[in-house]
Length: 405
Image 1 (cartoon, rainbow, N blue to C red):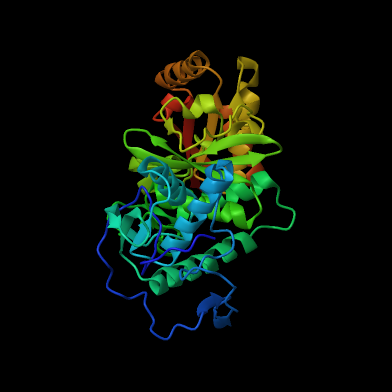
Image 2: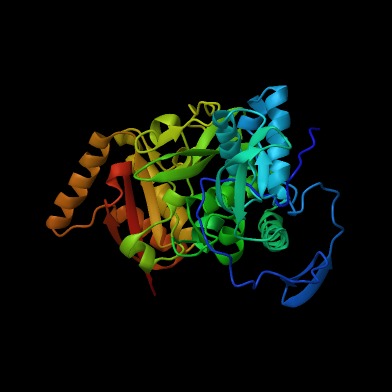
């Protein structure tokens, strides 16, 4: 490995938030690698052996998600790994052994793949170093290696508990939905929390930006052995989401955009949407533009694992309407959920159904009465059902279910 000189501290670069150093509630001067967890109501002190590693920042197993870096040539990969090691050691200045354009690619790759790095505050071009004969990249850090390591350990403990909650016979789809739903329900979208772009923010503090959601989801996938990558792009602003590979096919997952908002989210905080869970390129490209970092992401063409297809909630003809609607209500009522959803193959098909529902309700009748009554009788509850086409842009109707006695 190339030896770097005149280097003091290191960290990873990200398309990240800047922030001043925190109030040091994360630092423990005598931190010994142990932590406390609450297990079944009992506080348990856990001590783990420190793994052999070259970096000062503790990187838990699974907190690296390689994709673009695997496409670098041998010389580029050596330089990239040295840069990652330098950032992980919080070095202040790193000599550049390639031109600035190549190093910008390295930095962007590191910001996406190195899930454990949330300590970089800023980076800029440095001066010419007479010792190395190179220009440098200068870094400033918002966290010490110890503080970042403590955050990573805390995130690791939460991730372990999330993964351990999975049943032994869970399929890959079940695992992905479990991770997706956990983050949607337990994490709040935040622009104020200073570590909202980190795995720690999403898993430990329950506050995240899209970057925090995407990195936490990727980390959980890595712990479960599911191949995945992080995608960067643009919606109405810079954005980050995931792709996962199941049975040889790739799918997009955007946890951030499946977080409900508005009145329904306030009424039903456990509500989860699935508009961007296991979707194709054609769906994601409706309102997401992908930024290529070194290499294009894989193609996502299959609908086999799409939520609505997989759960029998997809209506592709008029003949399917009653069967799918009945399945939607049965799923929701059996789990005492307040929301039932169905998705339509075309806008015309959805419009014909919503038009019928509107017209019937104006006549004082109740659309889908038979299906609602069947679910009510099966589960011994009185159901009051309303519906909203707020999500019609996704060709989805959301039914709101209220339970009576």
